[in-house]
Image (cartoon, rainbow, N blue to C red):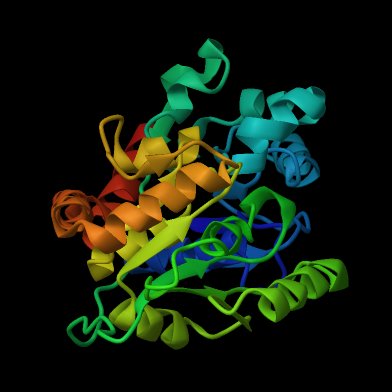
Length: 317
């Protein structure tokens, strides 16, 4: 098929939406299809549309269905679709979900987080990650915690830094943060935190190889978001063998499972600090997180993601 894949993220963006779109394009091409990736639909002929973001891609979805009412549209629901825009902008968001012939989501709890009318056309496609190219070798001098995410409100990006402020002098814990500041205000906040907190190091936006290098030497990763549709950085950490401590939002629980022991109450600095101290001081706890991650990791392989897309394509054929 000729597939138009629409993502609101610009071509050279390192945002999650663009990364997902580019990976899905590779998967669909490997499955034998022609894929055109664009930020908006230009009206050209195609056999199918895959649109990331029900709200931001609503105009593209409308135009494609107007031109080709009998051709399938798959809408991928993002975190902001599910946890913000279906409430703040319900008309375009739910219109896209209604027009979709099939819906794709990234974690298991989405089925209970959207209106029940759409549950029957929903498939979970867990995001994949390649394994590390070399064995992990966590630092012995420091207990390094990595935070991989852009600095913007939805990520609660400085929570791990705040949690590291008041640790005992004997703690070896450091927070290494990789991610682009959404605007100058966030850059100023990160720089101010570094000035007052000698355990926090913000490295800014880095290429993918630098993230994987951080996974090699980190003891664990923190994902502190207040809103996620199923963050790829979680699957990257699990496949890399890096234990995860996560905010207890639906998007994290839907990836890690209801009984995962590495959660803390979202936005709770003291709760996160307690989990970080436990990970540093209790090898059994850190080992449990590692073992649970190893059990989850096979779900996030490229082979499984491709298999899920085969299921979606069969559903709409």
